[in-house]
Image (cartoon, rainbow, N blue to C red):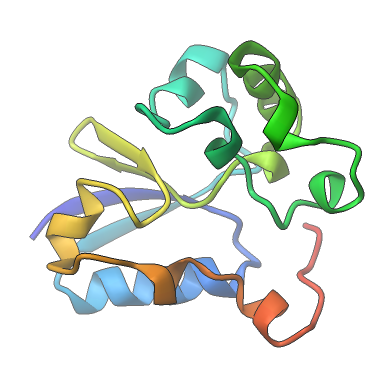
Length: 137
């Protein structure tokens, strides 16, 4: 059993489902509001490991969907600056397990905790699948 700090958007149904899965697997989950956290670029960068910059983004964020921000053409420093200013752009959840960090549930250390090779069923946005809108706050 691990204690997991789980940075989420509180109104996100997908994050709520992810927390339930982690708790069902016997882990303690401490949920934090990603939108209220005071992020700095270095701390935020520590969650992304060797992920490509475009994978750092929440593709369902309004600024990405509108085309205002294009994750496929942005450098790391600019991406972090945008995310510090607008946490909705950050891929969720951000996970911290005793200092081991990742973004999303498809990376270690989360994969080992769940004993699964893929988290595809936990990563997709429920609102997009149901063709509904996610609350913006």
